[in-house]
Image (cartoon, rainbow, N blue to C red; front, side, top):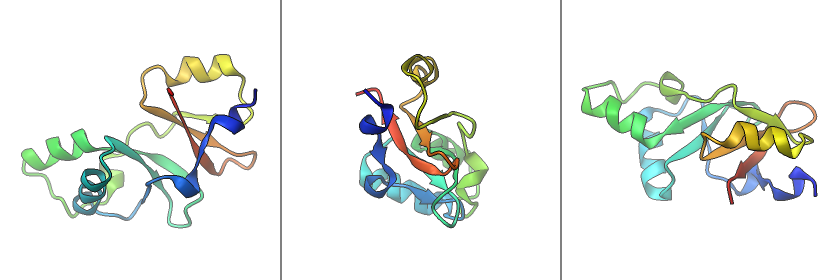
Amino acid sequence: MLIKSLVLKKEFLTTVKETVTLEDALKILEDSGFRCVPILDESGTIFRGNIYKMHIYRHKSQGGDMSLPVTYLLKNATKTIPVNAPFFKVFFNIKDLPYIAVLDENANFYGILTHA
């Protein structure tokens, strides 16, 4: 079975653009119920990393500037797999993440692969 058939495609995901503020990202995360979402570039094609609700809460509780862009707290920028990756690579890379970002043949964001 191909990984591509298991991927949740980006069109069906909650994502944020890299210029979104931490305040706006927190609202998106709280409204969606997700603990983290992918950060994409302005064109919506390049995966930048993930933004986690927990990191925004910690930043806010320490008096951090909530008008900063989400890239300030960006995580997992290098945690990706190609859409044609073998299963063993997926299992090795996803173990510590809620999901792993999947890139298409042109290294553009294709979607995510979850543990489910």
